[in-house]
Image (cartoon, rainbow, N blue to C red; front, side, top):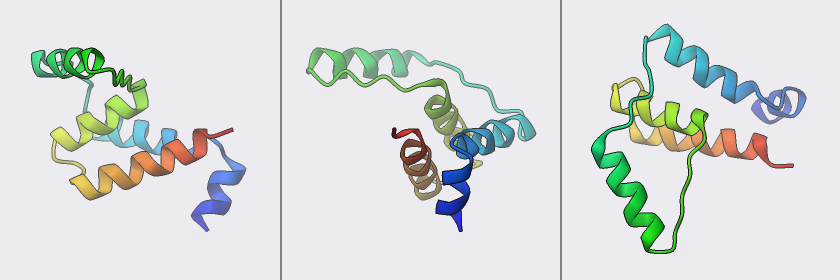
Length: 84
């Protein structure tokens, strides 16, 4: 059912993530450790850039709204929907 839902609404999971953050008053806050991690990965040749939705997933996990497994599954579902 979720595959069918995501096929009919390509941004369904992004909307779920945004509504979850809004309902729980969660905002994305970039910490000094985030900046450090970004520079370390960039300098090692693995330039990883999360989009605003992926950053929101991280914020939801940090706030305790999602556990690690839920965050990974939600991100995987979001990335599947983004695929052309």
